[in-house]
Amino acid sequence: MSITRSLLTSVALLPLLAACQVYTGKPEGPPPATRLQGQVQVENGQLVFTPCQEQRRFVLVDGYTTGIEREVMQLGRDGQSSLFADLAGRLGGSQGQGSDGRFEVSQIYRLQGEGHGCDDLNFKRLALRASGNEPFWQLEVGNKGLVLNRPDQEPLALPYLEEQLPDGRLSFSSEANGQRLDLWVAPQRCVDGMNGAVNHLSAELRLDGQVLRGCAHFGAMRN
Image (tube, rainbow, N blue to C red; front, side):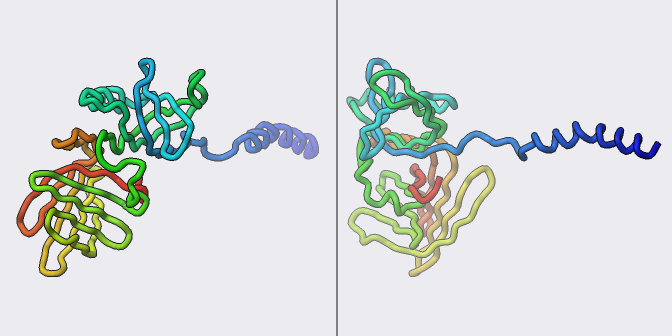
């Protein structure tokens, strides 16, 4: 009887062993987004994206309600035939003749018709760039500190403290050389009032009691 019970037990365990062999761990999530910079133009009613220093061409597809088509058309009304774009998304298969595939956009970091684009030499060394107008100011944050640029003044380089805030907001502060500087950025669509450039962050700079507002975007050091 003990031999019979042993055989029955072994047979009952077979499905469980098979199930353990089939299970391969946690299910894989979607592949990470790819961030690319390049030129966007309209061709035959489609948005075509060419990455910087490349010959490949991708048809842009808005799969995440980013409004990429609306944004491009809005900037294009100012006579810009080609725009610089800093985008994140997923690359897909071929969209037919004349393209090397599709780029399904999930995030617009920056879209502009003027200013530095693919020839921006500082981009790879930046974590964040913020700027505003009236009066003009620009603040660049990198791994060696932050630099504040203003017209008719020497660049001001300062160490800084970064703080992560709720809802994806960030704070950068510095108190050195007798000056107090605070920069707050928030994940919010922001349009430059001077050139129409679209950024994914809004910015507020407080410098010695003066409040200056503008837009910001991440550099290559941060996604």
